[in-house]
Length: 152
Image (cartoon, rainbow, N blue to C red; front, side, top):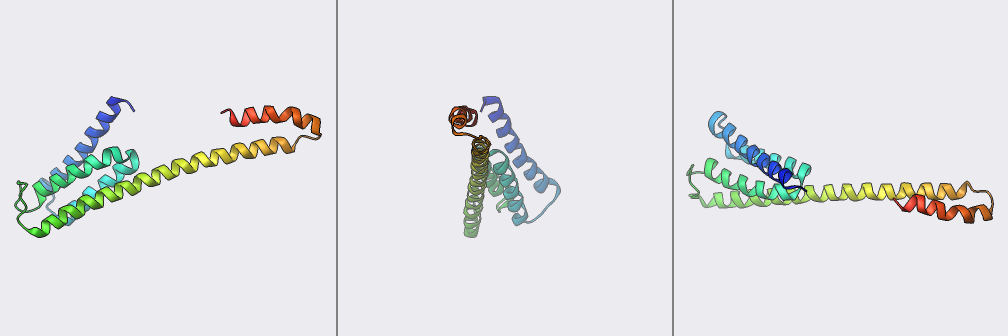
């Protein structure tokens, strides 16, 4: 993948985190659970669309922003309540695990498509062999069908 695409996608993921922070910190005041779930949904969408390469940094950035803007004491990286450590670790682990699972689903879908194409090629190959009437013609046609089918 080219550097401009990577940079653009990275900037978009940071912008998504920034937008979530601005909306919930300045305009719509909600509880931290709503913010965390919004971050998780955004991370899952990015992971499903672009993969782990973008979801992991987004998870870390979201965790830092969640701590800084939404967990008391606000606007510091200090964690006053020990329960908030559990919240932060749970949030980070959940986002990373969900991103990993989303990446696995993408990989399995790609593998499934590859296998489907392979089965289609084998079907065309066997169909081409079955329509040949005599053995001599079949022996002449087999190399042609093999090349047409597997030399893609």
